[in-house]
Amino acid sequence: MELLLLKAAIAALQADQVALHFLTRMGWLSAFFVLVHNLKPESQKTRKWFWIFGLCSFLAPVLFFSTNWLLEFFNFQASPIPTREAVLWGGLWVGGLILAAAWLRYGHPQLNAVLVRFKRGSALERNQKTDVREIEKFLPRPISFNPLKYTVGLENKKKFFIGLDENKKGVYVDYEDSVAAPHIQIVGSTGAGKGVSIGVLAAQFLAKGEAVFYMDPKDDEWAPHVLCHVAQQTGKPFHFINLNRPSGPQLNPFAGATEEEAFELFQAGLSLIDKGDASDFYGIADRREAQATAKIMASKNLNIAQAYAARIDILNDPKTGAEKFAGRLRELAETPSINAASGGIDLAKVIDEGGCVYVVGSMRNDITKTIQRVLLVRLLQLAERRDRINEDVRPICVVLDEVKYHLSRPALEGLGAARDKRLHIVLAHQSLADLRDCAKDLNPDAVEGAIVDGCTIKICYKVLNPITAEWLAAMSGAAQVDDETRKVKRNVAQAEIVLGERNIRQTERYFIDTNMLLNLPKRVAVVYGVGLAKFASIQPIKVAKTPEAIRFHVVEGSAAPSADDAISLDENIPTSASASISLD
Image (cartoon, rainbow, N blue to C red; front, side, top):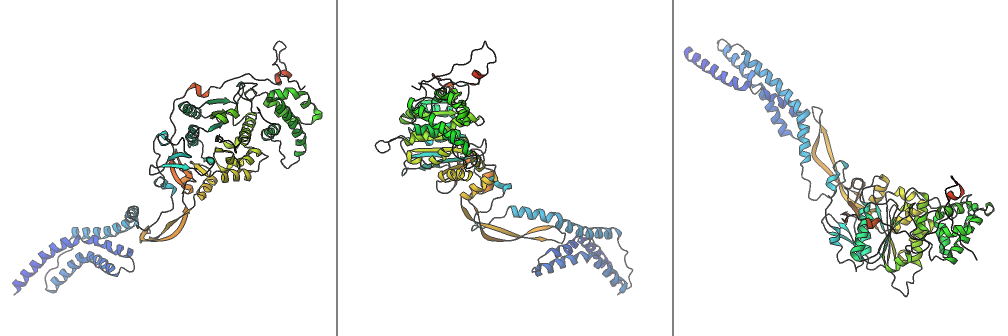
């Protein structure tokens, strides 16, 4: 009997060594003691299994000590604690705790971030609010194309092309029910692509047979070449004017003007209108002399230099009290480009027969900016004087790049009724602040309101001014979107993770929001006024530069008495001759 018990004990010890070897390596299950505290309270079944797995980490010491107890109970010698197995089990048990804590602290948040990124949203979920950090996924990429391909056949239609939308379909404006094309406002920061849009639009209006007047104060590099090319292709005359000194005589804006028209031109260019302050008292004398000068110019069809020479003695008399008008008139008289005596560009003839007049001005020179204001009002006058009852008058397109350098009170008041006179305007500026940076005799709110409300078509490129972006975004209207809220939980290792549950509530954002407008790609614009606001890629008309496009023609002109006549630095150097006009 004792022999059998001895054999059974030896067999049990051998089996115990094998089991102990296996169970020792289950010490890492201690990790479940940590992981169980990270479970949701409602996961009772899972929690129970985690506790069972955790308790399994103690099987090795339980087996060893229970076996020794049985051996002692049957008077057998107990086996000593195996050092190697004990150290291994202890290391695995402690390592399991550390591993679980490290996973919850570092691994679990990383996995959570990956799962959140690759989640698949509900098919019923609507558009979301934009995130400026991921704005690229909300914006289209520019599309390369030749705009001339999409303007074929539009020459005899009241319709023009702007660009291609996100689906590569043409964006067209149809104005069949209107007497003229709508006013177009182009907004965008420097280099965003405003000049490209202007070139595409002006080229189409020129091809339709309209009289196109391009007022360019910044001397665009490509625009004159584009319009000259289109003019040559369509058989239309092209004229280039450079208003800046020392360019020679090229036109006379006052040619054919009536007394009232000439006086209005003085009011527009020289800001002779009351401003509502103390300076208005002195403006009375200026307007009196302007009226007298306008009368002489209308009766004898004079240019400014001739009129100044005719009235120089009266204007320079201190008793006249019109120092401002006299000084400003002298500045215009000393500008050769607008003092053509004969043979210059006839604005009225271009309006009657069609063609393009490209005018390069200035954004810095006050005298040139005065001329730019005069030219715009003169074009409005010529459009108004036509017989629209008995004649089918030619439409007029006036392009005003950097519009703030062209505005005056008469021009602003005339813009509202310009389309009824078959005149429409394409104007460009950088921001709303540009519209408010106007002449002192203009109300900034009135300027902004007249242009914003008067231009039914708006092409808006990337802007840098947040106020302008907010205005454009509000103009696109509000769209219903789903706003997501998610729950965040802090685990036992004090790491925050996003739970799988999320709530979606209805909210709204601008259809084209400020993030989009502040980050539009180059040559991608938002078009307003053609249904819903939409993205459009706008590409330039590619042409080669030619000298003919920027060559102006100098004609016979008149020279006014200048500062060189009053101050002779050298007696041997002759002064310039003065034009004299007989008043008899």
